[in-house]
Image (cartoon, rainbow, N blue to C red; front, side):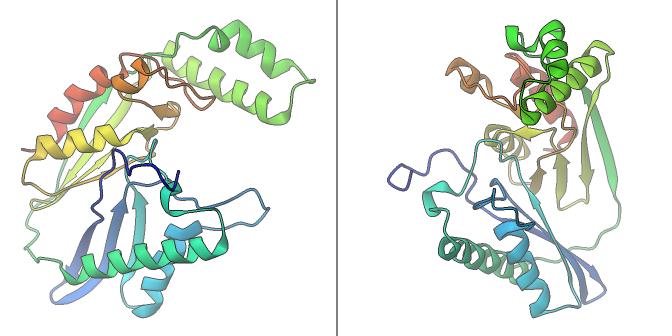
Length: 253
């Protein structure tokens, strides 16, 4: 992984600072990466993104610091991470430095109006034989399976029930005038963030992932054509086309 190309990413960290007159009150930072450097050791941690955020907070406790991941379903820090504590510290350094510099480069505008736009969308459920209602029920009730597999079956069944009931997904945008914030469902792939930013043109748009989460991963159509598969995947081909129009509806060009 360390020798591979960077691949498709959004290299820019984005920050929105909220002021009361001349006093900065809060900063919201967003970067598209899976927020984990290593795990599975039984330690609770906000990992390198949370530790970078905390470092920024302790530099100036009068400013509330918030970090949110972007559309990072298929983006990790693997190229710059070997799973060691030393590499975690390097990731903390790089991210906290980027957040600090973004904050310093804030351009101030008066906030005269806040507009919220929301689009409703449906996504197709994955057509795989391993996700039929009968198979999911059987796996859920099979006490010989591991707890992890039974939990996945229960989640898949819950997702399937949502789709069968016709429950829609929200794709909201908060428009602050000179900045827009868009919340994407589930673990949307980076392609959706790049699509949204291209549509916005020169307008500042911050994309946030991990909204409505029944979907699991949301690959682009290209990823489906490349046969992307995972146990954390409940949407099927055609999802990209269903998301494209709502993106264009809520984001102001």
